[in-house]
Amino acid sequence: MSMGAFKGRDLLSLADLTAEEVQELLHLAGEMKAGRANLHCNKVLGLLFYKASTRTRVSFSVAMYQLGGQVIDLNPSVTQVGRGEPLADTARVLARYLDIIAIRTFAQADLESFAHYARIPVINALSDLAHPCQVLADLLTIQEVYGSLAGLTLTYLGDGNNVAHSLLLGCALVGMDIRIATPPEYQPHAAIVDQAKTIANGRSTITVTTEATSAVKDANVIYTDVWASMGQEAMASTRTPIFQPYQVNDDLLSHADSKAIVLHCLPAHRGEEITNAVMEGPRSHVWDQAENRLHIQKALLASLLGSA
Ligand code: CP
Ligand code: NVA
Image (tube, rainbow, N blue to C red; front, side, top):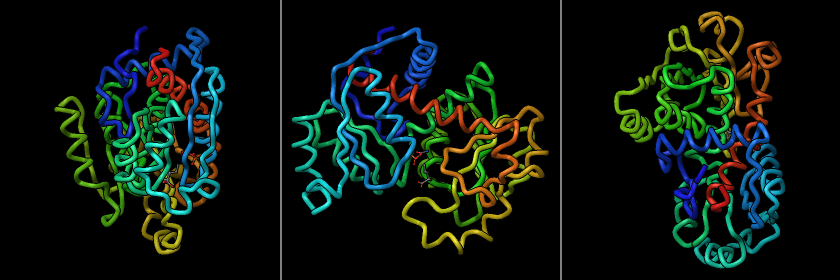
């Protein structure tokens, strides 16, 4: 398969990809996971993470090592970034050394600025607005279970956050219906909902509601994430009672399709957004989901570096 159209591009949002490109990435990731596509690149990936990470940091690193490349951890506390060197300067310098960079930060505008100044591919490894790599892995996981994606219904419960935003765009791109159920003050950004509706172009239904039970009815995939994201920890205790009706528990799951699966991007707070019984229960696919970060990001790296 030729993935030449990806070479040199950025992935800052799933809206950067076409529906066909998402399908190509899912296919390549599946081939790599099955050992049918052993791609190689002798390139260097930088990881510039302003927030904590286990899965994204390790899966990107292992993906690059498995491709034959190298990884440099650009932890802001040991680079000049942490002492205030302007992002525009850092971007232009790092682009002279690295072949590709994954950045985890707060403001989407910082990612866009970095990408403007850096002449190498920039990957969004999570921002306050979006988590595109997570949702590509989620789609791979759902496809593995159901065989295909179009026509399925995913219900996301909890905070209308970065993961919810990328799920909106990802589901729209693959023709899945998506229902987002959140407390009234915590709905996803209207601009992202509109963007998803434009991408869906009538091929799938996008619903934003405050009703948890009706949102779950007959859904094929139930998805949740933490009620307070990184950077919002101080608000966690205020949020707990507000979000309680959106907890993924056995009672709520009884309204979903009888074969519905449960996903969570992790890390999870058992007893808050999801019960321990559901996390550890037969519907949970969270460990396959976490593994798929590796496979989809390997496909993404190979594609953006022009090795696929
Ligand atoms: N799901 C996810 O991005 O996990 P990390 O924060 O551990 O990278
Ligand atoms: N919404 C969470 C996702 C963590 C992977 C956060 O931003 O902290």
